Length: 83
Image (cartoon, rainbow, N blue to C red; front, side, top):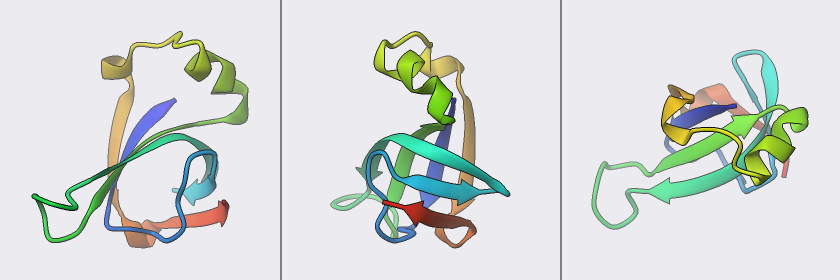
């Protein structure tokens, strides 16, 4: 599992969407939208992503959120495969 901060809006990105980032496909377990009212000129999407076999760990909270690897990217580098 990883945290992914997306600068901008890559399209129809919602919870349980499948995205392609950095040559791999991930499932978005959660999506939090930041910066609509106050903040940067473009919104930021803060996502918890991982593989499908990590879903149970996410749902049972068997991880420490602040210990996840955090990545940052632009919206143009993320492709929404399935919503």
